[in-house]
Image 1: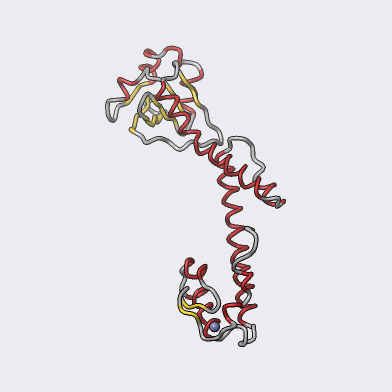
Image 2: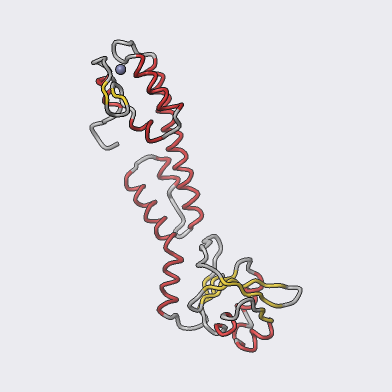
Amino acid sequence: MYLFGNELEIWARIPDSYWHVSGILQRCPDWGGMIMALMMKCKEVYLYFGEWRRVVFHPEKNDFSVEFSDQPIMDADDMCVIATQNLTYKMREEIQDLMEPIRFGQALADWIRGFSDDVKVKSLLTLTKGDYKDICLKMEQLMCDVMHQRELRKDRFFFHASYTDENYLCNTCKEEMRQAFYVKGDEDVALKWRPGSRDGKTECVWRNCRYFDSDAFEPDDDD
Ligand SMILES: [Zn+2]
């Protein structure tokens, strides 16, 4: 629950303060219905009046403790934004900030869908609007899938290259490929490995090596 209003600002500015339910209701009588009920029920309650405070309900004492807080990360699963007054400019900006990850995730999902006709991509990124957690989860699934595909491709290339006749790819190059792909553990080194070159500089003595499967590295299109 994200509550925007400055009715309690004077109290909220006192560090480590406690607010009794009756005290709040005295100050904000119109909170007695829905707002107070939600403040008691919600697991995470944040108050914004120009600064953020986290408000935690203690049922045994019927009061709230108030902690200083950074800008919370919005959980779009079941959230509730309430304004108890006209929004100030700062409040409006803060709400836009809270929504930004959702907007960004949505834009990214749209962008990826625009690029790919892949059925899997389409089905994964068909989203309920504004569901931040869902977007993150699906993006993660997609990323894991891409990484997995890339590993498979690397393995296929490696075995294909390993069994190639030495006239086309020399044993030194094969060994350097093995080092780059599986031993050094440096992704950058693995990506920069090319047949016929050492560390991207020195060319190996076997002339054919650098022509080996060259279209596997620099494809004509951007796929
Ligand atoms: Zn070579």
